Image (tube, rainbow, N blue to C red):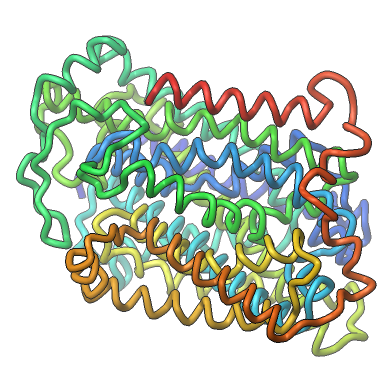
Length: 576
């Protein structure tokens, strides 16, 4: 073992792990004193959350170690546009959550989004979405977070992938340790423990990210020097072969631009982002239980609207503090400032910066922040999984279940979900980048769910039979596309037809098919709008903007939404 940090730094990491578990357990004791352990307090924190906590908790649930590792990894390989667009385009989608979806969710007084779909459509839609949401929480949220965190921990301890601990691989050993620690405080404390630890971990995460970015920025000589270096030297991995057999052989002159052309070496031109991202963004930010559960726990509609907008402002930061370090690492490797010449694998770019640039003490802080990112995402996914199983599956099976029994079921679900997520974590080893694997899975899950929610809240003629058919057929088409893509059949079809078959375009094509299916099926199998569903459908697109604005100044959600929109448009103009 070749330890990449000092024992002092390593001790800071262990102290942090103990502290965050203790904080989560303490939150559980506070919850029991305040709410008697009932379901509303365990799963939704007693609907007491204000907009600052909602915004921070949403950001924390979104940001995991995959952002620290894989955003820098993709930036090291392709530049800031490849993953930076996923961060900044989220700002526009969070406006939709604030204006269009959050009021309806609060109006329906539901604990889960599958429950919302049942009230709007039928029980079949609820059951299907509950199943898909649990799968996405375990694989998309928890699995990738545990895998990347274990990769980091193994790297800082200098353990090769062939090293075993207690008879299992070192990566799998750290996946188990982090999964169990997170499961303990999530099981004990419920959503209150999750949001408390998320708020604390988000601050630590941002502090750690700022440290590495500032250190790298100063070392490279500032923005002008960074730009000049990137424009004048070849990529340090020139000739590096990725897992799919492609070879990195491009320059770095466009590494600081957010708008890429059709010749983008990463295969992700800007038009693909504009067509594909809104589809996955609406699912992820507006229709996914793991993220939206914080909005459902808001104490009133104003807090539910302002929380996502606050989160949108925070989403400005990842491009500068999570993506940019990967580009800085490229420039420093180009200038020969690393004794080893730079990371041998793009996946190690962020860890390489931490271990080679920061002084002792700060290394431990940043590594603790990286583990914080993984644990906060895992805790959010575990709590949402427990909520989904307790309310949408178990209580449906046994309607007379008491609130106390629901909490017990939620705790058991947390334990089981932790074990399943640990087992699913190694799925991401086979992709060129971790982020590519994550986004491929999201792009196949999102289209049918996005279509059903959009049609459901904006079209009174959308029928329950059509919604269920769209969810099932759309999921089947997504699975088919996954296997066709895995065996390069879609790539061959794209070359033959001249179509871009990048995963972002695949999600757009699936979305169009699902829209046609939803419309045609609603026309062929019409159903009258249920009375209980009438408050859950907007009369027209202007209705969400009518009524009380929620306050003055930045407390006015309309004004704040306009400010978010203008801010992100300005950022794109600057970094076009």
